[in-house]
Length: 337
Ligand SMILES: NC(=O)C1=CN([C@@H]2O[C@H](COP(=O)(O)OP(=O)(O)OC[C@H]3O[C@@H](n4cnc5c(N)ncnc54)[C@H](OP(=O)(O)O)[C@@H]3O)[C@@H](O)[C@H]2O)C=CC1
Ligand SMILES: CC[C@](O)(C(C)=O)C(=O)O
Ligand SMILES: [Mg+2]
Ligand SMILES: [Mg+2]
Image (tube, rainbow, N blue to C red):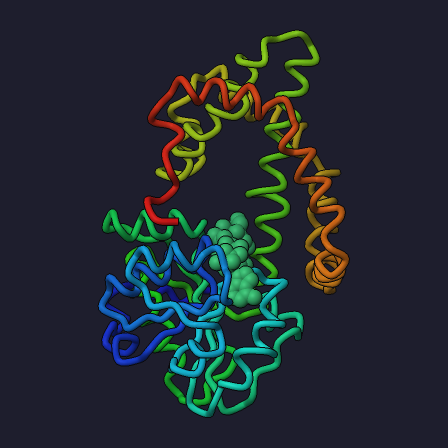
């Protein structure tokens, strides 16, 4: 099945420049969208509760900050970039009362629409601009004249121009420099959750930690294990990013390539693939979403415990010491948030 990919020439920046945009939340994605839209000539207002610790960061950048309700009331386009578990409460309390006909409700991820946690009225546009990368790098790439690819989707097209508006917004944050793929809220939500759980965050972190444990438990120096299993992973993935797995295999030794081809499938074997399928099933049938919402409502007991265990893993102490000797590695992820 072929997809439609849109680039800068396919998007009219004038559409979003003609609107007032409220960005609700000023975290990883919020600061990136707000600052890049502002730099693209868009009228942006930030929505944050009184007392939010993000308020000074946004104000330092010269952005106007209102409460979420006041920002939503002023805006034509309301982009919700607060945590997924907070969005339905923000929507009910601050956005729904200010969502009049003709406005547009935008998302950076489809979780709340896909799982029916937010149900907007039929007379507004509902669309998504979801960057395929961490917000701090969305901003860094925009500033560097590059861009992070985006997924765009339209759930409701009350105006008849929702896709054009979403593409215009994507252009304002640099997304159409790299390519914006048209998809659905369902495809974005399910693939994004799968990617972060099985490959990008969950899979990669567990692979690195387990490799480090195997080497150190066998008596090798933690510093050697850190460089081998974590630091060098970035350099290897850089080659994949630049030229695919083929370029990585071209650059490594033939000894490494033979080990990759003969041993890799033993590490990521059919049991791992079956587990990945199970994880995808839990995303598709809503089990993961129900679990995460319940965990959040219970005060995140497991999340906090696992976060603390991760922070206490010996790889973190070894890494902090070694990164301290490489001044170019531990740079602030952006200058502003
Ligand atoms: N992180 C990423 O790179 C990516 C995220 N996304 C999606 O983007 C959305 C935002 O995620 P992310 O940027 O990680 O979020 P963050 O956790 O970084 O957002 C935190 C921001 O939301 C604010 N906030 C918290 N509660 C409220 C509230 N009740 N009302 C208004 N603002 C509030 C916080 O304020 P305070 O400082 O006061 O706590 C802070 O400014 C999610 O839908 C996520 O799935 C999509 C692609 C990648
Ligand atoms: C990979 C994690 C992510 O989906 C992202 C940065 O794209 C997220 O939700 O943060
Ligand atoms: Mg993602
Ligand atoms: Mg995600």
